[in-house]
Length: 231
Ligand code: C5P
Image (cartoon, rainbow, N blue to C red; front, side):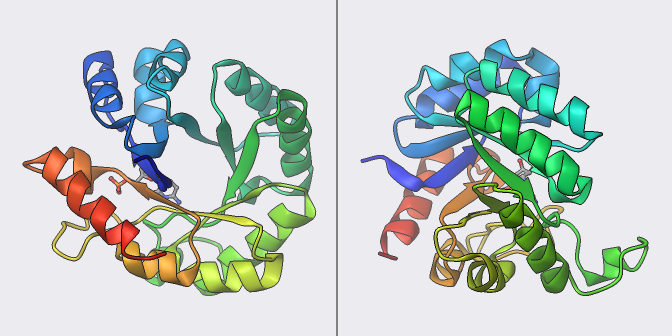
């Protein structure tokens, strides 16, 4: 059975690895994510090839530029066969509106990255950004909602604030997922799959806990069991 709440991140730099994992697991998950590494290495044609596995493709390019450039890039990304694309909410209102207009025309879902899950309060101290991660994520989510986006990418701990500010129908796509025994790698604001779902996450984005596991099939199976334990 396909688990619609799971998005597997195909963070590889070669067609062989990207398509190998896509074909191996595409029937089990609702979404496969093509990110910067895969897209830059293999180009837009990789999106259509991944989509052939049957899972929808989330093209995670985290676009962030002036409104016209981002609008045109969203239109181009949509032509690659992606079902969902994303931009950085930090690009601001006009950029978000330009992205949304392009996404509407192409009929793809559009979500905005609030604050990367690799940034915690300590990393924010280096940046000219005031406030706590959760407060920043909430404000950016409200901005994305005002601009008509379908949802946000945020940390599990931001979901309750995002949903209470933007409504339960506003999508929360949550990376930084770590089954309890897994390595956190470079992620800081992390949560277990069950905890993220209990917070209200709609889609969990998981990469290395499966793709870098010694036994990826077993890792996916235990992840699916944990997700399915939360109705
Ligand atoms: O391997 P891991 O499970 O950490 O992968 C998480 C994926 O989610 C990566 O592809 C990363 O680019 C992406 N992502 C993230 N944080 C965000 C947005 C996307 O980790 N805020």
